[in-house]
Length: 324
Image (cartoon, rainbow, N blue to C red; front, side, top):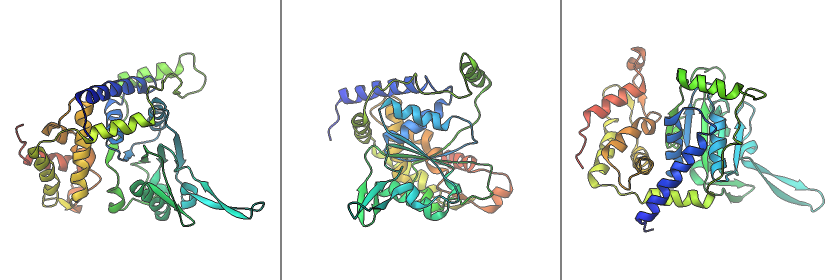
């Protein structure tokens, strides 16, 4: 697909409008919003880590409304079955035939809340759809309508009664985002906004306007895939990923899928930064979110109190940044 400068300008304008609309419902969390938009532009999925009550559901609802997309939320629990996610076949007594009843996975934006509370079999059913973009029910393959994006959440504190995602499944998420508490100013704005002439304690998305449709999102993804990257930037991204495999203190490094993810995310970062080409800083700025769930630290570093982000920052400091 050939992308013109007019396509790029239009895409940048649409992204500005999407940000504006989301900010009608969400107070603060600018970096989180940007990272979710990056994942959407790169046609990837997101793992969100943060304590409850920080507006994750509201953010996904607001994003879906901007492009008239369908939004579904699934609360993952220990008794959730794969068919509760994907759907199942039902026997109709009148017609004496089986009919497929599609599950909540058939949507545009899926919020998989507390994914690590469901058993491995249910997690695998969701992650298979994320990878293959299709569901098999009673031998029939059913595709999910594009754009399809999964935003899975997990609580960083509670570990009892959870089933941690294996490394191979974590690798299917383009980004891992961490949502922190709002700043004092943001929290004050939030409290004022909710308690001013409002019944109840939650915000809604009624102020968010639909500005595009699902076809426009697919077009944005095509534009993102055409963003130019210099050969030296490719080398820089791959060198970062390869360095995680030999860096002291990292027991499991990132695989080739991480290099692909880093390039895809960097293209989206560039477009969100209103450019039609990737610079090394784009790669560097999105590297933590792309790699933090793809590596494992050596036990001695964890005992000493080091975390994944600090080690990745050390990796980035050792890689020479090319001049473009």
